[in-house]
Image (cartoon, rainbow, N blue to C red):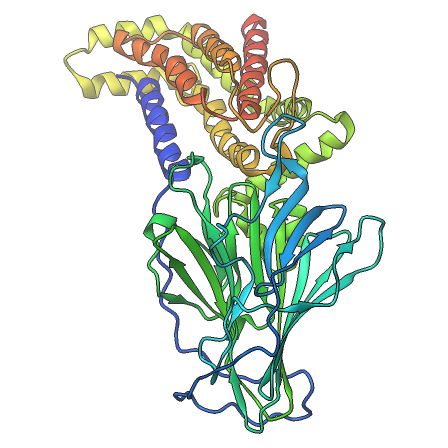
Length: 536
């Protein structure tokens, strides 16, 4: 077997290995258990707070609300979303994104970020697990507004939920909404009405029901996600180890799907830890635990968060300034290639208004950049074709002396100035570009439900009729026929199987990626034909 045949087999195995390494989901690494949490003071209204008291066991007093009322729903609408809040716990019951639907049908339901049962705790529940008073999460709050409407371009508006306990404490949850943002500000205030110090540390939780029978996307992650000490960690729902704590230095945490995320961003990440829980009803709880504060009598403690509930759009996430863009699965090694390719595709799309056409133009640009290298490669293949009969003679002459055959073959290459590896360079170059574009097209929400033409109406999904993968396999077969034949019949069969292997591999790939590879092959066929027709 000569070096070209051996290299072809190695490249095939390399593609399979890289596929397994980059695209087959592996169990996420378990983050290290958090160290002890520091204590701190964060007050709204006191001039100088005394230092935080050391951890101790406090007597918890169960409080009774001054007034118990029935639950009310408070609608919030902006140009970007519609939400429904509840006075029961001052929590979130629904959050629908106006610009995104479940499927291609224009009448299909809007994407819903919140998924919980009626009898389950709702997202954005705030509790105080280590306080010296017991404030129940399901108690009813009063609210300062019956609804909020920001669809006419008004400035930001606040919704204030208040829960009062006679002669003990008053809790306020202050939400600030913006007409042009998916982000929401949340401030939790605790007014100490006691005649003694109040120990408080909030636990802000996002609760999400995960249907164990629902179809899952094998290429996407659905479950808790965190960004701790500038490291992304994904958690598989079925493998959640309830009761574990992670951190501190929790920059943000939340619950994600392939294209959308609900995230909670604490004001003091260095004093924040993360806990995860999965109950018997398959409800996942992602909770941020803040620092324990000592609130003097008659004063107020304040805890601040930012919330981002929306699409995993790189530009929007990056603008948050806390590393939320890392929630997009570009991969740690391929990010620096995938991101420029995505930016280029988006830039081209601004002019052509069709992501499929933008991908084709990008393919042409990549081919132009590597055109000189491609010419050199195809010239090398042409020269290899000329000396193929002599290589066959050498194999026959030295069939019993492998060392001599190798020496004479290398001498033949040197005499004719042929590089046996030159013909493989185009494929080697395409592999990283292919994987980078794969990440860009597979996980970028810009390609979700983006149409091309005819039967391809979603470039992020597979070709529903498998037409483009089959045509792509045909172009690979044409390339094989144009390449110099192998002397060994076994090697020829292996190379002929490559188009079949790639065709089956591409059947479930995003149609946008198949379009890229298809046009890359067509351009390569044209370039190779041009080189073969030129006299040298």
